[in-house]
Length: 362
Image (cartoon, rainbow, N blue to C red; front, side):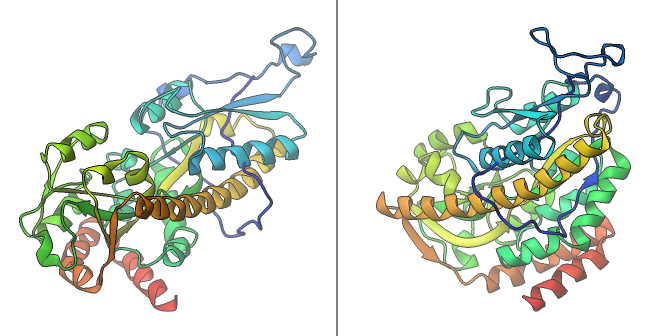
């Protein structure tokens, strides 16, 4: 059997016709020669009668996430599974592994895709930056002004262009753009103006453009492993951190850092992808089933992400967290030179202008 990426979720939604499906990315092309699943050819006469065998051309895909079974990624995988199995008449099946069963972090899951242990993954673009530096474009804080703005960018020309760049330089296949919430600052005191960040030691992502942004705002970006963050806050190793409502609530960080400020500096982008070696081994009907399933899985994952964010926000308030609104305009103005320098270094001025134009249309 050959394995391949898949997802599924409850309920039917209208498919976004402009969701892209482009082949793309893989830093270790030589490793990708080893298939994660296999097709049972049986000299062209597969019967599927014996235990452990399947009919000729049947495919089983392994989808894995480090997140739990209630996460938005798991919902996306579930919808993918449901649609692909129905549309392929069962010739493509999907196994879903959650809670880090096949890899406790994104790095391990991407390695699993490369070595053939996993077929479908949702991960941050940061894993591609060493091979395709253009994907760092999506890491820029204050690039997007709303969820609608983010969707118009990733589902349009900008998203397609970056996906094509990945495709031209790797052996991965992008199935859709997913999200992981909207990131806010949280800590021991509320943040209402950029001045409130002055001198604050803030745990942030390692991206250069992200750290330059916090430096411009007066904060001192710090690197702390995510699984060590609760203790780091509890022991005041750092003054603050930044993440979305769902992660803050699920990790109970609000128990030790109860002030959450809606800086909304990052509408996060995640990539749902597989390897070319998997997609290319599907027949035409199976490829069509995967493409349709990927579109619906993307819709389901995005909707689940928004629902979890709303539920987590309410739960945080019920648990005593204090959430304050923030006028983000001063933050955007101060950090604009950082974004302009980043897009110049990347040679992506035209795409950046497209993002700005789309913001005006919202």
